[in-house]
Amino acid sequence: MEITNILTEAINNQTPISFSKYGDGEFFCANSCDGVNCDMDPYTFKKKKGLIESFQYMVNEVPNSYMGIWNYEKTQSDFWEGLTTKKIKWAKYHTIIMDNDNVDNKVSLYKSIKYSTMKKIYICNPLMIKAKLLLNIDYMVHVPFNNWFDSYFDELMNVLKKIIRKDEKYIIITSAGMGAKILICELSKLFPNNIYLDFGSAIDKICTKKTSRGWEPSYEVLMSLLKDLISQKDWNDPKYDIVYEEAKKKMGIHLGETIEANKSKIVKPLFNEDWYSQHQIDNLTSLLKSVSSLHGNIIEIGCWEGKSTINLANNCYPEILICNDTWLGNVNESIITGVEHITLKILKERDVYSIFIDNMNSQTQKNYKIVKEDCIAWLTNYDGFIKFIHIDASHEYESVLKTIELVLPKMVRGGIICGDDYLTSNINRHDLHGGVERAVKELLPNFKNINNLWYWFKE
Image (cartoon, rainbow, N blue to C red):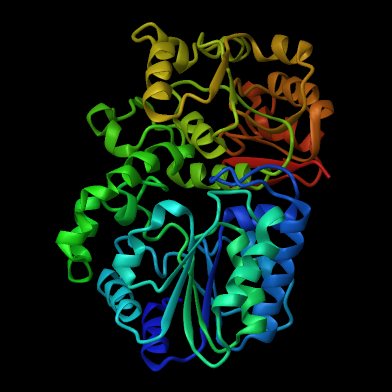
């Protein structure tokens, strides 16, 4: 639901309201205590407990509380909805963040905050100092860039309790990671008449010139959009140069080099064959993200030019993706069918392996490892644990069956085995001896498929 105007109206009328964002990090933390989010903020038991209890309280007890959810992903929404007794007031995750939607409404929201007579408190990292100018912040309260919740939460609450008076109304803004959701909840219990806004990374770039998420509008575009809120003389004071330099080192570190620094180096990937649809890539991404909190390796068997591989590498970063292929084409499939496979014909015309390397180096953070070996031979001697494996190599029944047999003992609980060509290499393909479908049905009870993509969870 679009609630930007609802927030603006609440600010103009000084009506208590809250908006908290629950993205992938909060979801994974609430489901497990392993791993980190994109800001390298670790998932801990204390944080998990706090996120669940805070979500329940804000939905069940706070009447004007909205929850921002990332793309309303069903797996995540089902999880959160299972925690509450009242209906959740869902909102767009980017309700406050500048993107291409409802830009004018968001500018109006920022203006309403800046010119409100309510006192404003901003909880953020120390580099966000220019927010004081942008939004007329009265109190800047700083927290570390990440990993502050477990050790600093009580101290932060004490600081805020000394600032906030019960006979005044405040706009309290947070850019403090996963712990911000718990902070908003606890402050709402003590000071229910305030307005609470979880800004997250919304004003990172305008205040530091540094991208922290990788998809924001350029600094110049943001300056144009927010020109009415900015005093050019104060905003461009050289004293802020140190902020920009420090931001390069400390913000958006999960992105590697910034997009701005790479604009001159951006290379469009080369995919000569359209063998993997964008819809299937989106489904593959959802499966990969569902195991992010588990321990184990991430593997793709059969990479070709890297269309699905690039997606997997970028969505598992900073973890390493193991890429296994011979780049010799489907030799066994050709032998079994008696027909030269199309991959063998293509390899006579171009160097697919070099295209794969170029694609991976230009489109990922290079968080991949190549195993250039027959998958059966490699998996026979592989002794690691696997949390996610995508199989898209030879399609004949015997090869797929043996691959799955070798993988099964190495899967961690909750891990996923998935693959391509469930429909195109179906059980009626006698030339493939029943192909992918036959092997999957024989070895993986309770598997599911979304068109050509099949998948199975280890219980």
